[in-house]
Length: 120
Image (cartoon, rainbow, N blue to C red; front, side, top):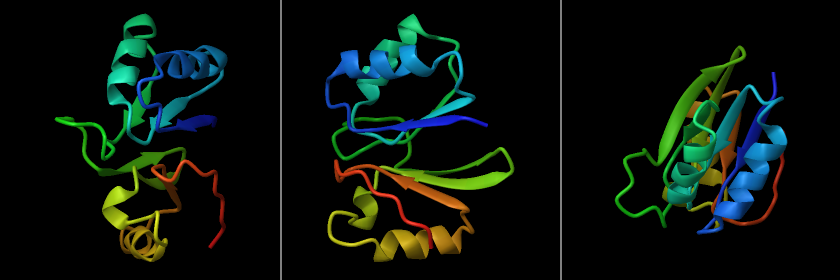
């Protein structure tokens, strides 16, 4: 199982295209964690067959996507979110609480523009 996770493209469609082009042949699923859903829409006109799950970010105005979503894939339960509803720029307490309450195996978020990995 190979999942590609990205977020916060902020009107840089070329970055989204580079990610998709690089991984389109070996990714089973893409997760986009918000702030650039218009970029993803544009990229999907070129790559309509990729499988992508996504959420909206605080800069995705008038988005049809939810702020958070539960995805079951590869025997794992993912909580994906942009992160702003949980105030992840301040701390991860609210997000950790939500991940535990939905029994997520893996929680993914964007918004901070800072790479972060932690096992809890």
